[in-house]
Length: 333
Image 1 (cartoon, one colour):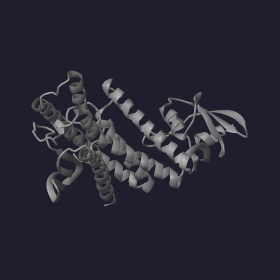
Image 2: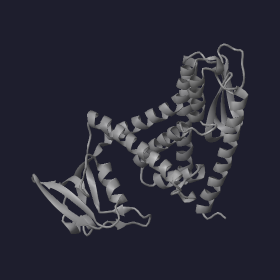
Image 3: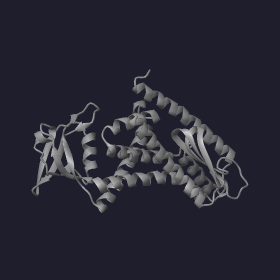
């Protein structure tokens, strides 16, 4: 039950924030919005306010803002297609920007009220690789594998990606000390050396932590795209809604802060992939507008609509395939 509530709440907030971004900017630039919908599938509730219908649908895995003239020709001067290219780009990017903003605010709040990790070691697990090597509480990590460390995420990332022994340099009583150790792996394949960091809460530190985490996750997204292009991504490396629900369920066992961190990650993930130039996604629509700017005239809306429809069909087929794999990992079949 906890998993279901957490999953529905996260999906609802992520989609609501994304679609509200489109909606708010569309209204701001004078575009007529026919419907604002949260969820997909059959409608379970609705109300009208002004010229817009607000609806809630049964599946909390998506949503949309239906704007006049978005996918068809319209003579209405307030239609999406009759607005300037810059106005349309602003509307299309607003959803992702809102997701990014929410993620940054979540990271900021976590750091401000709980504190953010520093490069100073707090606890060292006895008999763990770090303890056996001689690392102790109070040591400050200054480099890992000869790479300078500015934050805790950098040290964790290098340790995780290293094959074999790890070289760690720490500062202890103003003296630099070097250690070589071999990480252990848990049942999930995560590399651990048995240390945790001291945390520190401050307003400036929270801002730095929020943007550092945001940039770090965006870099992971780009790394994933590179791996996908080079064929280094398998079906087990991606997850659909079912896989995300399973991940949320696992995360709830580690507490509310872990769920918040996951919610921030999902927001960044949704915003990033929506900006990719894939037909039916916001990024593709932005690409068509940029082509329009270069050509000096818009593309045929009907032809563009067909491209987006084909892209949507392919995305739905891909989603079904990924969901099937998600169910396979749950040993349902």
